[in-house]
Image (cartoon, rainbow, N blue to C red; front, side, top):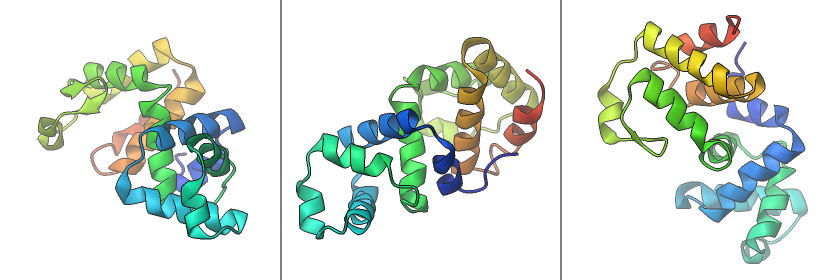
Length: 163
């Protein structure tokens, strides 16, 4: 079963995966979630917001990686950051297999209008399983599903099917 929230999925990550996600997140932070992430750090560490803002990138990453309740938006961004950082090859592998246009694993605008067939999604999952550990595949599929449950509704069933 897929986790239904990014926060619950985030809590399942290993300490190493949470740190890797947080490092990439703070290396290339998105302005729209950076404030919420800083607020989470400030709250957890009992810091004033300006002190949290002044932390080094590495200190922000370490502080973020130990947050178990970073908030849904921040958790979702951290999960995406893990895949945009260390696990970017997975994105290209999957998107190539399902036939979605992308640049280095990031969907192009045309990808928003494309419907993914069950057979294309199945081919993508099979290709992922052939190249990556099963726990990484399940995490990626759950993360993708959380971003757009309607588009990726078939992934939950495919993730449960034997590899």
